[in-house]
Amino acid sequence: MMSNISIAPTWLWISFCVGIFVLLLIDLSLFGKGTHKVSRKAALIESGIWVALALTFNAWFGFTYGQELGMEFLTGYLVEKSLSVDNLFIILLIFGSFRIPDEHQHRVLFYGVLGAIVLRAFFIIIGAQLLHLFHWILYIFGGILIVTAIKFLRETDEKIDVKENWSIRFIRRIIPTTTAFNGNHFFVVENGIRKATPLFLALIVIEVTDLIFAVDSIPAVFAVTQDAFVAFASNILAILGLRALYFVLADWVGKLRYLKPGLAVILGFIGTKMLLMDFIKIPSWISLLVIFSILLTAALGSWYVTKVEEKVDKF
Image (cartoon, rainbow, N blue to C red; front, side):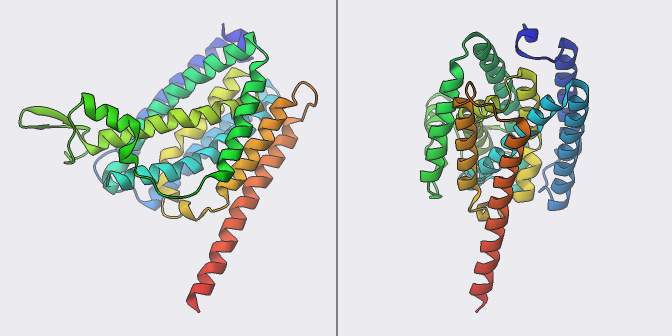
């Protein structure tokens, strides 16, 4: 089955999944032990390790299976990474709304990332099979990206109370909940009744958010590549560093004011590319250059405006 949707042999799929599982165990044992706040330095080191691992695997994959697939891998990784940064703002709101202590956030994020990996694997395999059977689905994916780009441009940064999320209302109807914490545990026993703590509720919202987020992310990666392994591996490696990236960027992710407009332009570009794929073939290196340029412009623009405002506030 895999040979129909990817150039990667079965052994590579198995090896990659086993490797990811081992890396998750190492990550949990090294960076997720105890109930302490993750320092910026430790998060920066961990984030750097994840990026280095992803780029090393990307280089090996491109050398082994061709430069074109290597470019597609890097582009898919870059797109998913940039979308993940935008998702960090939602996670920040979730932790703030449920008042999750800093020392317990890494546990919620670990299981949130684990759930995201399972969801992405499922959706990417299904999406690849559908694209293999029904080519016209490309146009649906392209349309989704165009609509998402417009939505990104129209969205405001107003804070919402995620505790009113429909998934939380549903959970509270079937599972007793409490506002009390029990260390870093997801459940606590009160008066003989097992109740879900705010940590569990925050985890549920993060998983539901990622499910919605995947509606944008999966079409985006298939606009970059139609190889299932490239889509899967680039997405998973980008997601793996999400937890560490959160602790690196948590304090100033809100200052990236031009990130969302930049993502809107990126999604609009790759959505248009997907709609025109049968008529105009845009080389992978051009897509990579365009996406990188947009992200760099958004980041530098956000940094520059923030610096100017800080200088004005001093006077």
